[in-house]
Structure formats: C-alpha cells, structure tokens
View (cartoon, one colour):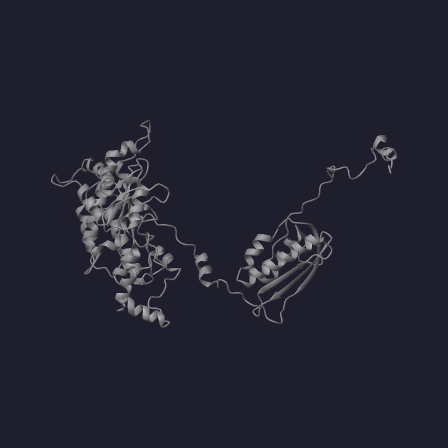
Length: 490
C-alpha cells in the first residue's frame, strides 16, 4: 500500500478482514518509513498505557487495559487518536468509538458499549496521571498548581452514527433517530463524568431501552471517587476513521447509498431490509421511476447537530444552512428565459459630467432579469467594457444568481469617472458609473437605499507630467531654438 502523502511504496501488514482504506490510514499515522505492521505499531501505545500504574482505589486483581484495548482495535470497535498513537505529549490523547459495531441482532449492546467507555476512560486517566508532569509546561513558582481532578484527562469521540442508526432500523432524518443519537451521546458523557465534579446530562426518551438504568448504575459505582473528567464529542475527519472502517465520519449522514467501489453500503442494505426490500427489488423500483430510499435533506445534519449539542463537549462544524438551502433550491444549468414583452425602466443620468444610459428588463414576477449599461460619450474601450459587464450580470441573473451578490460586489466601486450625479434626485454623488448603477438597482428591486460614499476632492496641485508633452512658460532658449536648427536633407 502507499501513503497518500508519500510517493514511495510501503508494505502494510494488517488483518485480512480490513480494507485498503485502513492500510492507507495506518501508513499515514505511522511516523517512521519502511514496512508497517499493525501489531508492532499498536504495541507502542499499548505498552505505554500498561506501564502506567493503576488509579487509586482500583482493585488489586484488575488486569491492565492494554490487552482489552488491543482486542477492541482488532474488532474495529475502538481506536486511539493520532496523538495517542504517536505518543505526542503536547497533544490531547483520546479514543474514537465506532457506534455501528455495537449493534447486534437483538439491538444496541448498551452494556458492552459502557464497558468499552469505562475501559477507555480508565486508560486515559492512567496515562494522564503518569505523564501529567511531562505534559504541563507550568513552573511551580508562586501560583498554586491546578488540582489534578480539575484537568481533562483525554477525549472520547463517537463516529459512524448514520450506520448505527441504519442498523437499528431508524431513518437519519427522523425524531426517533435524533432521540437515539442524543441518548447514546448522553450515556457517553455520563460514563465519562462518573466520579468527577461535573454533573451528568439527562438521557432523553428514545427507542433504545435501558440506557437510563445503566447510566444510574455507572454513577452509583463511581460515587465518591475523584477522577479527572473525560471530554466527549463526535469525531472530525481523521486517519482513525480509516482504521475503524467507518462509512461516515462523526454524526454526518451518508448522502450516497454507494461506496467508492460502486457496491451498496451496509447502511443502505440495512435500510432496505427494514423496508422489506432486497437489492434486486430496490433496483426494479428505481427502474420503474420510484425512489426506494428517499435522499437525506441538507438540513438533516444541522438538525442532528442541534439535537446532541447540549450533551457533549465537542462537535464538528455544522454545514452552512444558507449554502445548503442554495444548493438544494438552485437549478444548476437551467436558464430562466425572459418574456417576449418585457417591463422595466430606462434611466438617464450623468456621473461627474459623463453621461450614462441604464435600461432594465424584468421577469413576469417583477424581478430583475437583464440590465444594459451604455456610456454614449466614452471611448470605444469603455463602452465595450460596460456592455460586456451588463451581459455578464444579465446571464448570472437569468441562471439564478442573486442580485444582492452583484450589488455587494459593485456598489461603491471606484472605476472611471466619479463626482456629482445629475438626472437622479435620489443620488447626489457616486464613486463611479458602476457604483451609481448598482445602488440604483438596489433601491429599485431590493428596496434598500444605499447612502452616498464620502466625497473625494481632487488634488489642488496636478503632478508634473512624466513625459514632456507640454511646454510651459519656463522653457529654455535652447528648446525654443532647437526647431530652427533642423535641416531637410534630400
């Protein structure tokens, strides 16, 4: 396999059930070059955790967490982040947990999930207690050091939420799915805060039964302890997701039912099975013009983000809602034709003594669809530029570009003549013809009056010309007599 950032070939040894993306992720997070073996690379951070002494109050017969962590990694249920994998003392160590791996035929394996969470929290707290002096850069001068139980010991992130919901028979964009995601995230934070000073979040009602009872038992078991808190959240794109073989990162939905190799995703097969469909019957419905699986709305991820934001500490950036709405509503590549008989207005004005004719054409609903800008007394180059600009803006308007974007870009532009505006009482001064034209369009079609820009007075003293095109009064006699000494030679 190869590292995407390295042109050299590298040999990667890992379990046969893992795919090529896991091999690429392993090569990416491995610092040294040459052949890479999963067992050897994982042994570094596993041995580091096993070398840490157990926490105070741990039973004497409790085994070291390294062996269990190795098993969870082989089953692709939990993996360390890059900071822990590479043993970086200046970064926050953490684990990423794949939610879909805890779904069984009987439902969500909540007890196994909590056991993995407690194992990850115990390993991070051991590592934090053993390396706290190395990780902090504070000097014991005159300030009192912070209490160890007040510092965050690490980070536990959840991923592959969409595949987990699909395996549970829940649509991503549904109230049951959002309640289930919030319940799993709240259970994660409850386990991470058990035995600390931070209060646990409340677990909402959800299709997953027994989570509240399980959370209460965890809090009762850790009562009276003085642990460091563990921060929780949903993951962002990182090589750890490749190691775990997730379908989607963090809480993001799968916007395509297919994998990169063209096969159906596991979440797609699960949702088809929940509807009583096979891949063949779903294909027949698709060929008949029906949609066996409705696509996910662009607003679904934002709704999921809002559902879990109060029960975790970290969340990836939510997609921009305005951009999502624009992408969903704008018809790409479809031009809106203007009517054969068009309405609009024609405006004649002068900016700094330079005439300008502006004509507009409107769609049936009265919105702007075309403009024409003509400076009749300017040079051919200036007239051509203004004409091309009018055509470009008109094409953009007819393809769905908002007029607000053009007004924001061209208003108060300094290009060409500027000065007092004549012929339009609503505008007294303009920095250019473009400034006047687009501020006029803003008032006519957007209902927004844009004030005049501050006047820029011309300089009282004109600079000296760069070339001697003119001859002033201070010309030397030598310059005056130079033409008399020229002779015509035949």
